[in-house]
Image (tube, rainbow, N blue to C red; front, side, top):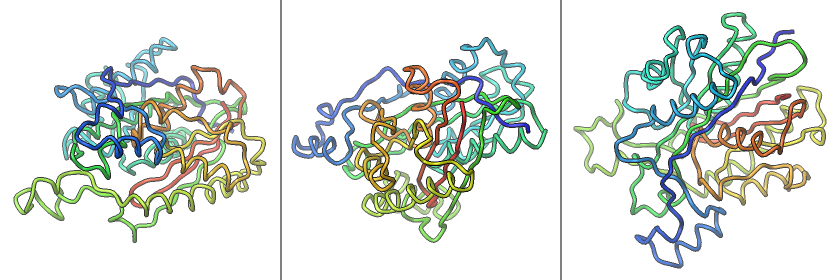
Length: 325
């Protein structure tokens, strides 16, 4: 059976570190609550002269260079982003050009913070179908450009970054074993950027603040703690895998209290959940791929391990992928 095997991973985080103490636009008490409410201690912010595609290219280069894989041999580039360079064309097209993957077709997907799990499932489908023998999946986000710096409900919790995976076809038992994706479009307003699209064009916006990212935090917390354990159980059940055989859960890095709640709901030790959100904050769809790359680099997971990637975000959307490294 042909499967999509992880051949290499990579990530890129901007050098500029913004700690909670640096958020002086908020009170000291409010800054401390960021740590208590989410576990976030710092985040990365990209330079003003950079855009999302620049971060994507850096993560992809790191991924390909690890195994000396020529960009010219990449057959498909999928970019997950909810903070694109522009409304059009697809941000992936600039990535394809700058990266030198001129022989690959390239396109964007947007499932907000769930984009990594949707992207993994899509890359797997392309390889299983025989359409391609390799896929470069990138997730890149630059929320610093779409956040109101004075909005306490959003600004302290997000950071910029990018992650990448190179999938190759394989048949040795490793690879993506099963994916499950879900959407509840009735909650499309829970996480959103209100203005700038065809629903509310720029010329009809009553305030430039309508171009900023908005989120109903309490609703998102309830949604994540409800749906994430459910989809983890369903994915494992459909794949015929016992949850306790999974070495590590690589979840969307939004909030430590969400991760702890998921672990407790599954009766799985919190040690099996990789955490790096304290360093980077919520990097939206990039978070799972960044965490995966770091978990491999730190030896937390190794070849042969069974892992599950899990994400939840705007749409509302959520997904999980069972993978053997």
